[in-house]
Image (cartoon, rainbow, N blue to C red; front, side):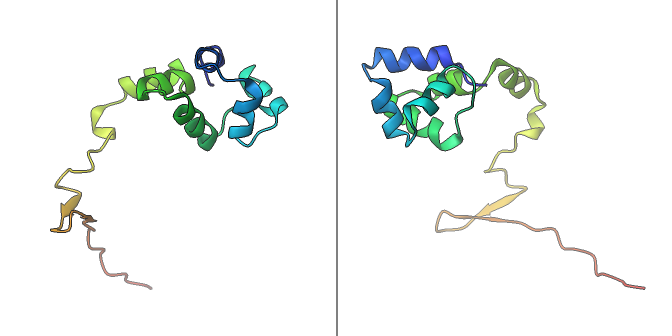
Length: 112
């Protein structure tokens, strides 16, 4: 659930009117109100637009849109679950700077 109090504070501190914010997010003022009081949740694209509009840093954005339970789970999850995209065991970088994922060959299918 989003930290709607913090989001509201960022909107106020930037001097935006709620009707303008709703228009920029392609929402009705009523729909934005319901999101800001916690009746409904922000969609991912709405959160991204709002974060950009407010000029939020990644830390500020995460404080607004990811709840504390998420952070507890994320920070206590074993490191091996968060894979490094540059890990040489899963990808090879080609000269063009793109990565190709190595695939493990499958055993031949032997039907009955």
